[in-house]
Length: 356
Image (cartoon, rainbow, N blue to C red; front, side):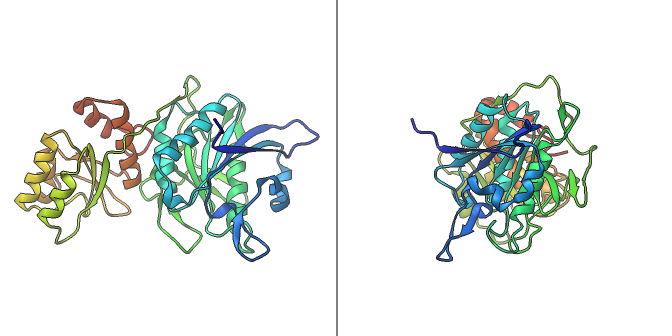
């Protein structure tokens, strides 16, 4: 069976021995595009990366690029692609010191969140990055994002990597992957992490926030979870939402998990029909997780009557988790836990630093 990727090997250390080995997984996205002779965007050939980014020669690295045969616009990313990324990391984990995933920005936070859950026992850096402008554009942010992501993935203290978790590096900031959200479509500062501190900031030097980084775990063993369950949905609560609309969502065939985006600190309509419909679904075994529509802050069920009713019928508080992390965590938990009580227990428990 033909692999879903093609490999390119680049040695920036020659003639010296490389200090680190990194795998760059190129899934698609704006970063890896250049303008061809006709002025149209075309995929970048990573065999020419040293010509595009000459400063990479300053690093003594063995780089391997795994380019997806069918490059993905990130709007088309699916759990199948998450499995392919996880498989590449799994297959190379014992031979590679760090991983860079080049990904489109629109769904990068979803993918980074999913991968953080799928890679149990991860103890090496997995850095997602991308760009707002193609690498071939004159003012592109692609070169800086990629070269700094590479530097972060290769940095160590003694024999241990400084970063040993899934992150997003973008516009000088290193963020925990399952805490990040895309917040900007036209400026370079595309991602924020409102509810968790920045892990590192790249200026003249890269300053790490060691108190916020996941501690290195010397005895950890990688275990990759695949086959994520996709019988989940997201419902954004809005004024004027009808009973019929909610019924159609809750009665979707096979639905096992629902993330509801509520107002403020977890508030929702107190109409009796709204509460009754949710209660009926929860009593049938549906997992309902409450997250806030706000960028910052968290869900505090019971602070107001409009959220106290939700707590009373068994809606699960998502605390300060992002929607991206909540939906992918649901997929992950549903994939290997069958009992509703266990599923509910793990949904309120921080597994990868995704919530407080």
